[in-house]
Image (cartoon, rainbow, N blue to C red; front, side, top):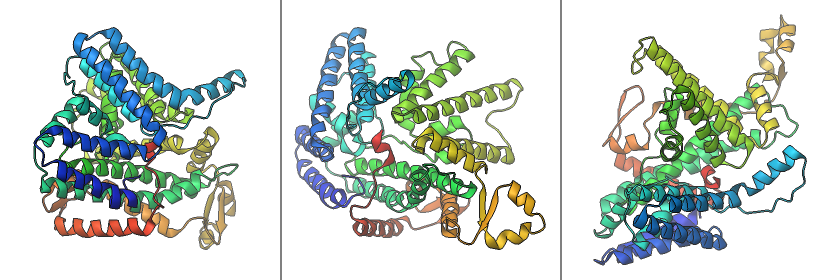
Length: 506
C-alpha cells in the first residue's frame, strides 16, 4: 500500500482520519493511541501479513529491554538489546550476502537460503537501537506500552523514515491525544502531502523510465557518452524527487494528525560541499550515524588520522545499511573518501588563514558544481546492478565508449574525418534518445537548483523566493488546490502503475 496508490489515498487514509476524528472526542488517550496503532499495524501487514509477527516480536523484545534499562541502566542489557536488533538485520537482510561473499572469495558452494527482506526492517531496527541507547543514557523514562508501540509503528514514518527519537515523537503523541482535531493541521499536512505526491508520481516515476532504460539494459552493452549521461542524470533526479517526495508525504501525513516529524531532506543538491550534502540528504540517518556510530568510535577526539578512519568506517557501514551488495559498500566508501578530502581541504584552508564561512561567488558556484559532480558519479555505483555495469556507465560518461551525434552534424567534421573517428564519434539518422528528454533534464535541474523546496514554500506565506533571491509572488492556497486536484487525477489515471519508493527496500 504505497502512499501514492489509490487504495491508500481513497480508502485507507479517509478511514484512518475518520476514525481518528471519532476517537479524538474521548478525553482518555488510550482510544487515540489504540486507533493509530490499529491503523499502523494494518498498514504494515497489508504488504506481507506474515511479517507483522516479526515487527511485533521486535517491538516487544525492545520494549522489555527498555523497561529493564529504565530500572538498572545496565551496559550488559544494552549490549543484549543492540545485539538482538543487529542480529535481526544480519539474518533477514545480510545472511544471503555474507554467504555469497564467502562463496566468491573461497570458491565455496555454501547454500544460500532465499529470505524475503521484511519491509522497513532497517528503519524500525535503527530507531529502536537509538531508543535503547537513549534509555541507557537516562534520556527516556516513559514505560507506557501503547506509547512505545505507536512510536515504532506510526505509519507515516514506518516504511522509510525519518528515523526519530522517542523523546521527539512520544510527547507530541501524548499531547496531541489530549487535544481535539485541528483543521489547520489537516490543511497544511494535506498540502505538504500533495506536493510530495506530485514529486513522486509525476517527476520521479516519469524520469525514472530513462534511468531504467540505461541501467536495466547494460548486459554486454557499452553505452555512449550521451546515453550514459542521460541515464545517470535521470537517476540523479529520480532518487532526488522520489526520496524528497516520500519525505514530504511522510511529514504531511503526520501533520494531518497533528504530529511534527523532523525534517529529513533539505535541497541537498544545493550543497556547497559534501559535508553540507550529508547535512541535507537523509538528515535523520546522518544524525543516527553520527550520534550512534561515529561519536562512539571516537569521532575527532583522537586526532585527525583517527577522525578520518572513523569517517570511512561510518560511511562504509552507512553504504552497507542501504543494501546488501558490494556496490553499496563502495558507494559508502566513495562518500567516506569525499568527506575525508573535504575535511582535509577545510583544515588546509584554515591553516592558511582563510575564512571558511566566506567565499566568492565563483568559488561558491565551483564548489557546488564539484560537489554535485561527485554525488552524480557515486550514484552510478548506487544504481548499477553489478561492478561491470557501473564501470561500463562510467566509461560511457567519460566518452570512452564512443559518441553518437545527429547525421546533420557531420558537416562540422567534414574536413577532418580522422578526428571524429579518433574521438569515437559516429553519425546516425535516429538517435537512441529524444530531445524532449534533454529538455526535461534541464527543467528538472532548474527546479532542483533554483526553486524553493517544500519547507521554504510552505513558510513563504504567499511569496516565493528563487534560489538567487528573486522574489516571485504566488497565491499559494489556490495553487495547492489546483496542484492537489491534478495530482489526484494522475493517481486515478495511473491506478496501480506507480512504482515503489526507492528507499523502501533498505
